[in-house]
Length: 284
Ligand SMILES: [Zn+2]
Image (cartoon, rainbow, N blue to C red; front, side):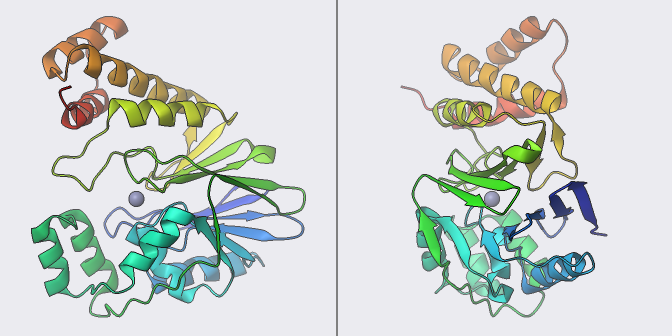
């Protein structure tokens, strides 16, 4: 059951759904305009968010995309307002437009390795039999960073890239000390093995740390992360990035190193992240 959360004075969001891969959709409401973050994974998803916002007399004026993965853009067909995205996101959407999303086409792309089973399954589940997807092209593109004044609240959209998607953008709301991370903090899922690379992860951590936030919103997390939780995740990512290079991708040595540093046994979450870094390690 998805519910609309009133996170802070200017921010509302609709909770995610793991099973059908629905990400968080958010609204940042100023006294002039409201910015919507992401379009959702289907017209039904976009419609639900719009209906929930209307109950609070909120409607979007502009929409910003965090990246071009299907679950963030399939709802675009339903969005009748100007859409802003990074130029790479625009190009990716252009590339998605001619694709078929029928079972046969999806299965074939999974076979070829250009689609992953996780997404193909979620697409089938979310869309049912109606696979006629039209993804309109966004209206406004930018290259690095864009600031939107919504009236008494601001959104800074910043392209950060990273392992998950090269076009990933984060959205910072300074007045609320809130940072929308989209999917940028997640691993590269479009690979034989889910992975992080030391180089991309280190760059990403620096870009995230440049923003002073108390609340972090990851698109597929049920709960926002606190400053403390995010600091722990960022520290772990830095440790993994350093250790994977130092130990040349040797998992046992990396685990030993990190356990010694923490002076305790590693958690499942820590082991998982180490595994993703090992997967992404390429011998020089
Ligand atoms: Zn994604």
